[in-house]
Image (tube, rainbow, N blue to C red; front, side, top):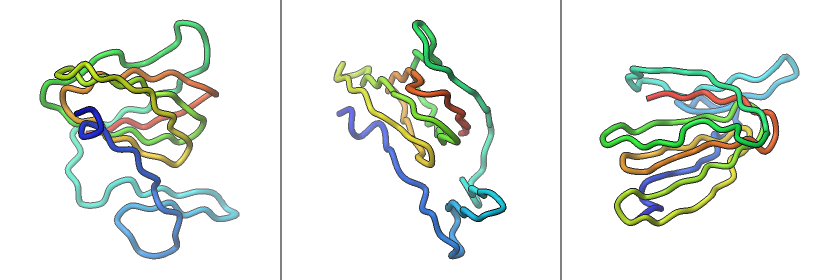
Length: 119
């Protein structure tokens, strides 16, 4: 089932000690995406709105990926490779998406966007 192959979550805005959080202050923003998790890959990408402009358009057989939206707004087109169920989700600044294996994903910008990808 497609909804079991992705998760969209808000990174909480708080001053409390947490392993994942956003801290927004006058001096700027700090985002703690992961603490204690082994990360083997990290990528930054930007994406602008436009016809034919997208990133992704593939799936992974074994890999789970996470994407954090630093700025902007994106649409993620998702498709469960096993059931062929498809859905488009909107993801905004401050949200993280986890995409599990066998879930095709394609990103399209609604507004100029910046994203960090890691696994």
